[in-house]
Image (cartoon, rainbow, N blue to C red; front, side, top):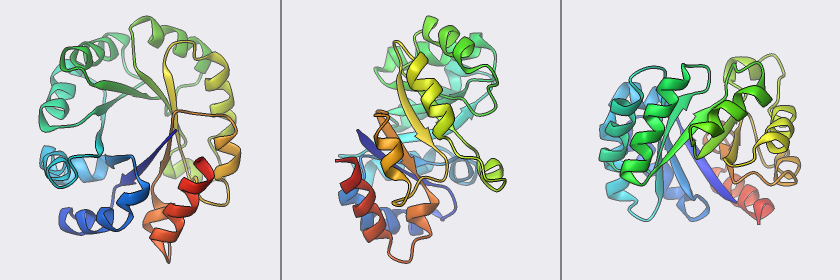
Length: 208
């Protein structure tokens, strides 16, 4: 089970410094969508340069141009790129094709997918690597959590691995660990913690 740190709000230099503080407990560093919008693939390249032993995820949230956009991430050094589960299956298939050619991983973000069992079956048919449960920040403000969707995902995913994101922290981590997803994604719980190192350590300890 891997811990993925989502970096969204910091500028590049501050993000590099922050990641260095908690790197001991992190397996995957996510260059989050706002970060990608601000820095483009420079963020991926710089993080891979400074953290060569860490896997990097580019949270592109691809909706079209699946092959080309995933290719940009892989050529910059990303081990993972994300495509939206709500987009056309042809786009997902094209992104998955790029992942296979570069021997990397494509992650399907299932945000706003209504019929999870049906979509999971369709996505596994095109050979995606990961399916990501994602309760977005706007949804979290209304009190939604990803645990129910994770239960559905774990029950229905037969080929793809599963990751989960959405407000997870050291107080809630145990119920997610119990379902055994391959990747647990944490952003603000570490990024906004009074003691980020202690929070990252506590989450990683629970995962172990």
